[in-house]
Length: 129
Image (cartoon, rainbow, N blue to C red; front, top):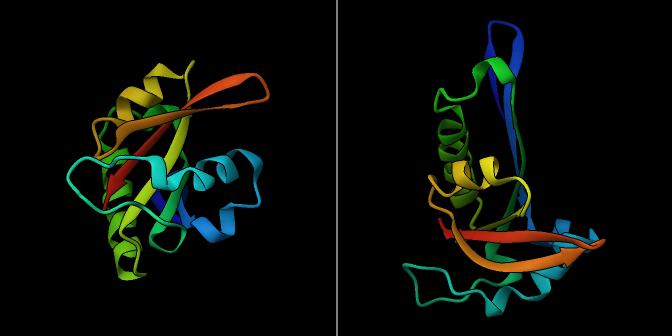
């Protein structure tokens, strides 16, 4: 978990964890089951459970949005994930949450697929670390 604070107040956070840990959660389990079908721009390698971390959730307090905090959180988490031996990162965003999707596509993430869970559509995003 990467946390941004202003003085003693937490103003933002993002989570990074292994695919192995996350596969027990139904929506992420679907994504992990399909890792080998995702084409990650910039690499010829295919993501696999052992080489992939899951990003999210991320949350930024309303007063702190638009200040590039998401990029800073991701950059620091990306280094931690690389140091832990991960080569890829995946996440998902509700199709209805275009603001979040737009923000994450400014990071290294690319759209790589789509998944349905409880009749809701999610965009799968991924990147090489």
